[in-house]
Image 1 (tube, rainbow, N blue to C red):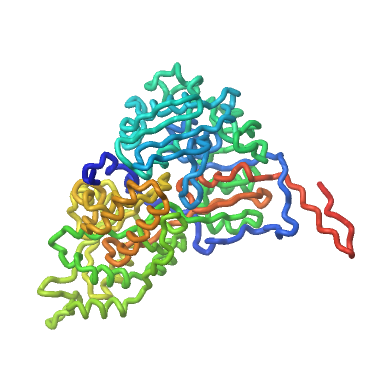
Image 2 (cartoon, rainbow, N blue to C red):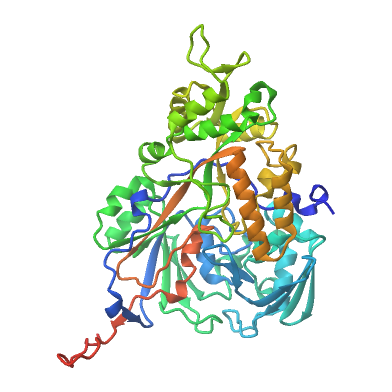
Length: 576
């Protein structure tokens, strides 16, 4: 089998070219410890109780994990209601969920999964393999608005039940990122089996959900005939331990500004996202703690290495010089309002596959100019500001999305490269046109785009950088490097994560050396919660709902630990 014949070559990292929304938080908040943190020596011991209320920006659609891909507020609530076979930690490593354990065959095509035997639905019925099989059948259904790549994958995978708590998934060929696809929310068969798939979207069960997650549905919050929120109760029989907080209430607001005002008015304790438009106002709230992390998104410059009109882009010296000539920190500070981090490569920092020995490219225009001169790209004797070599000017058109932020970025890039003697013509188009008329047909020269890898914990860079994807796939740079492709091929079919890690390390080193594209920034996300809520830990997220990764450990009602006895004192801190 070769990767060119691989059924799975088109899966993973489905490109989402969407306008980069206002990013969540200022860089100055990166790594900030929440204000009001209690010293470890007197850290409160959590106990059960309390109500946590959070402002969600948006509105309710339906509470069904198979139908929530297009609505973040739905995914946030579903994260607490439903359980999944596999979940992922902050580094992207798979962790047990409903699946207590799993084993992978040596050839990487068969996954045996053992379910927990103590998992219950919120109505008290046991969760069994039949529920998983039922949900998989729905994922295959043409009657549901399931993303096409997800539906196609599940149609190709055979699922067999051995007993009530043991399943086997058989793939037509090895596909190491498969565990990502086991993170779907599971539906209870006994609740949904009498609902035809074509009627599921509008079924009443979507507003009276029954799940197996840490919180169960209590009621809809209805005011003036409109759904304004959702109230949940802690599920006493949750298999991974009952949460400390008794109740969670989500309330919906149309804008981030309205959500912040709700916090000021005492309606909520948390805000789903601190967007740029409310950042400065939010920072003035004395009791609001900020939790900041990197998002799974990247702003990147693609070079069309297959475009003969700009053949000089095939010279890696030119690409390296262009990277050195970009003042990315200035762009972060002045265009992105400090709300991003300089990117170091195509795999995200903080994840298991990231190679932390990479050398970040600094801003060094003098070195960039020296490299171009050494490579014989010179300013013509007859005058002009654009370098040339063998009569070909070092000039190209940069196409980019037609919004204000990308306009400002493109102008900054143009300015920096012109200082090197590179001619840059700017062309703004809609994102839809950028994808359909430039990237997919490979008609562009250089492109500034945003990539969104949300809900994809496994890195799998194959679709963007493998040789076979240069014509009809997502290898928009048309990078044709056999060694890089071999690393990606092997990593995709190797179930051993240690071996995969080494292969991805090798790939990143080669990418850094060749620079087929220029990774610019990773945006950051900030979550804000009142200081009275403890136990929150926020690592890198693959979806905003990952902020609830350790929701069972959050607490509101706490009693301080007793102070240690000394010879000078025998008093203890009183219990409230």
